[in-house]
Image 1: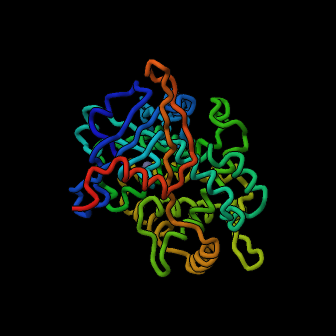
Image 2: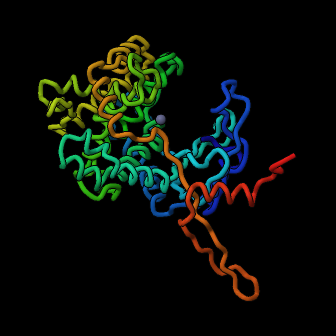
Image 3: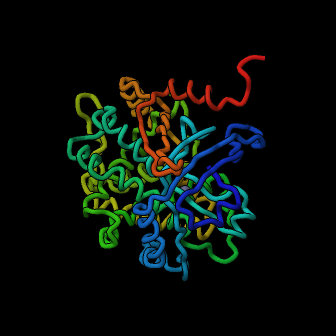
Length: 390
Ligand SMILES: [Zn+2]
């Protein structure tokens, strides 16, 4: 979701809102926007995480495993704010975005910069809801992976997104004279892969625990495992039988997972194991996996920095597009049995003002005991602006 100009300049507010016609995703012509509304407040604790990342941007750039001639001499991290959504309405309700990003318009970005916001209580709710739905039980290799996911997946997933957004996209530089559009149709897949790899590579770096961004030196393994499992197998639940991968983020994830799988095959870094007729991803060597992420990052940065269209096309077409058909068929069948809803929505809490005898507001209580249907009926009764008959 994107935000208008006045939102970009305001960085200090503790309480903020989105209220208006902003996004045009629902209109194929990209002209008619839908009404979106959300009141939110800053998650001060989680925002510290993105501030630490941004404050150390230069260290990350200097230690990146890419050719020094593609590094930025001075790099500035984007400081992303982490927020808690307090109430959702319009097109944000009941299904909501998990992030608010940039302004759409290039000239506003150029003149005023951009802003990235993560709505952490929403991503946290998704993560918690996923814990008991049978997905990890079905697709993860053993209890070791499941326990690690339970302990760290939410945290490491958010951290990976932060590294991707705050540092990944802003890292590296083009060589003089290289056309920023040189990679053409493969440009966005390569760019997303670059940002993802930057994040993956650093998640396993001791610097991350040193900065206090992860509580445990093995926590990053939760993200490595789920990234590879998703890229090699489970994201295929979103592809129809017989189709290839079209979407840039999905191509990038398979590209990375399939490339490191192939390059690590001799050392058995990652294996596809069978048990009871089902296929599972097993990661045997997390340190070597990290080295492979670094190698692919170096190659992808070279492609981007030099505008090497043929190499970019080759990588994407070889690893990112074609679906492994037997795995696809198997994953679809296993996923179907879990009977999971493809989208999830939210019910708003009910806020009640507490006033003293002078009528001054003293407190606001929050309750979660209204169900989805009752909530809609109450909203239509209290806030409907149109008559129910004419
Ligand atoms: Zn991105």
